[in-house]
Image (cartoon, rainbow, N blue to C red; front, side, top):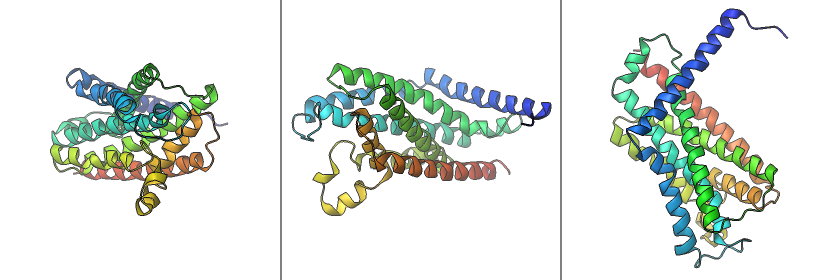
Length: 265
């Protein structure tokens, strides 16, 4: 194997450092905007409690362990969607408030400006995931998955988070104002509720079931549900990997192109 030239290794190290510094910058904003953590901790925790005690007795899913075991995989995806909304507003703020113009004058990897927000999104999502799992166990969540099932489930959640983060960054780049970007961010959240997150798709009207049962969010949630129940995920897992990987590549390419166009003038 041919070793990389010293200059290339140094450039790669600088790029990694730039991405890490931009991620830390995004995370430091939490001190001034605690709502970023509330979106991925308080809101999902409230959903867990509401779904368990308000709707859990009325919705019958036939799931072993009751409704909470059915709903938790959907709530994990809700966390990823809520965390992604922060990426939308953060990217839009950078583009609209002139911060990026300052970064253009610095000797740094320009890709780190957007990628830093995406990396920070991972950290916020992991915090929210840990809190939500804890609340879930407190109200009766009892998955049957072993270590392997949990590892695969977390990998699926991280893939979903990555995809939604790049979609959020793309939305932040096209928003003409911070308010418009926030409204467009609903594009990320709405599909979660038009899925199998909280009710079985079999209970929906046939015309709606055709869409909800086959969209990417449902595939991811059904894969998580099977993995956490200790069951084979079947085609749901492979469809999730293919669909979300494809969406990530497209969203990343479009976001990169839009950012370059916006910062080239």
